[in-house]
Length: 242
Image (cartoon, rainbow, N blue to C red; front, top):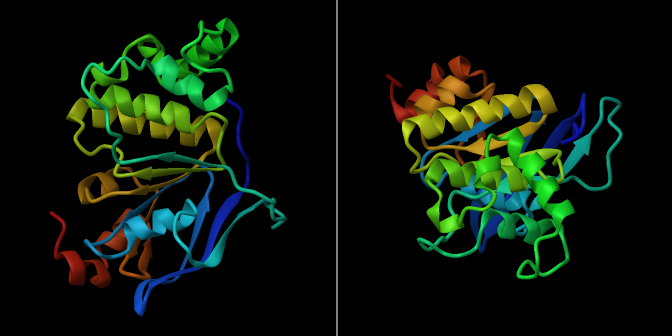
């Protein structure tokens, strides 16, 4: 996996979303720097999911999202990797990790004989995430932590400028959570990746985030975890974080 950028920044500029007369998001501006994990927090109804949908182009919105280099030259198109909160997987479904991965990177029908070149390409990429042993396993037989490793692997090929994660450790045990954040640390350090994560888990946000954004239809507070969690704006919405 190649480095996506270097000294770059993803700029979310004045994003606004209305449904009818209801304002869901108002002038949300966030700068997401490479090599950083930016965590979005907020109460239910604060607009976190809507912000992700706006970033992914799934809802109409005002404002724009641009990918800047160090000289503020705007690239024409940002590459975004996305890991959803969950995917619908039936237990023991026959689709393998290879099938799921190959369907996204090749035009050949996956029910045909495995392509050796594609198989090696996928295997090499899975190794980055310690998931190479899963390539022939059925998706339905994966644990929550294993499935997240696979989904992150898929989301980072080709290497994105921005990786978007929606409640990525929901339903995963403590070891799986630790493994997940080890992977995120690796992506930040070795691939200089910009990562934005929505989380309801305030303790994890405080522990792992480089920057925290407190959202309540607009950006109420942003900064380091300590700056946000010790702020009056945070305490007015969540009380004291133990």
